[in-house]
Image (cartoon, rainbow, N blue to C red; front, top):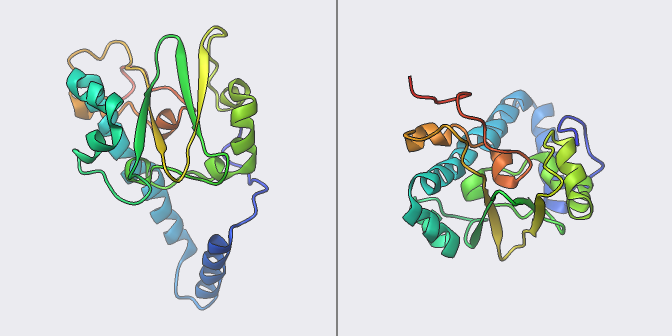
Length: 207
């Protein structure tokens, strides 16, 4: 599934109003669309996902915290001050040697903003929302993630009442790494389930 092409996705009424307002303000020279794109990209791929990456890194480093995250993700995440709208009720699902987790919202675009920032366009698009349930293995392959045939893929459907955070498996060769270094291996897509954590040595390896 390509991340770069536009999807046939009708705007909801709120999004349509925002788009219309943006168009009017742009035509009047009051805003710069490119500046808005930079701001959105920052929150979508940098600031927001860093919260979730720190949660994952702490779970990798601290077995007690990992157990708490499994039992009560809402409280465990809130203990790191990551709270707010779209993140009130959380569940963490842990990847393992035999199971890979994938998150989707089949009805709309429910997404844990407090730990992942803004949802990517493809997450909200009908092709992903429908195919992730019907053919999760095929969807993952289109993201460049080919899993062993014997690995189970479990799909979690986010709702307005409950949102999910995937905790990817900790890469080998990261023993002794700090939580900050480990967080550098965790991408937004890995916490949705469309990617794995980066391999050790790619980023943040101790000198």
